Amino acid sequence: MIKLSDNENGIIVLKKDVFTSIAYISALEEKGILLDKGTFKKHVTCKIQEGKVSVAIDLKIRYGQNVQKTCTNVQNRVYKSIHDMTDIKCEVVDVNVIGFNFSAQ
Image 1 (cartoon, one colour):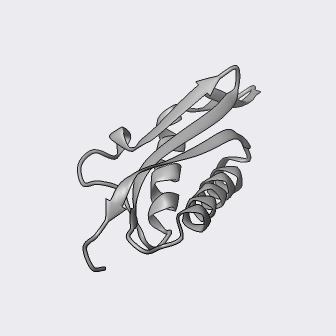
Image 2 (cartoon, rainbow, N blue to C red; image 1 turned 90 degrees about the vertical axis):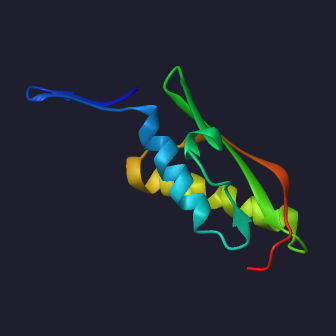
């Protein structure tokens, strides 16, 4: 958990599931990628160490699409979404291409 504020009314903290959910939804906004069906926790992982957030995303890219450009777009989108929604900057956003999607989309 990351503590955001502490005042006379109580403490505000964010669990790592919040960052995982934000990263998952942001990654899906990029066209041409596929996060396998099933529980998204397998494909998006988040670590919080010493108040720093690291995110890793495993995805498949549509065959014929520019891999580097797509991965860079996903990284930027996830980083920006987490920063905009929580005001916390990610230390690392790793994108791992685990395969290609050959089906027409």
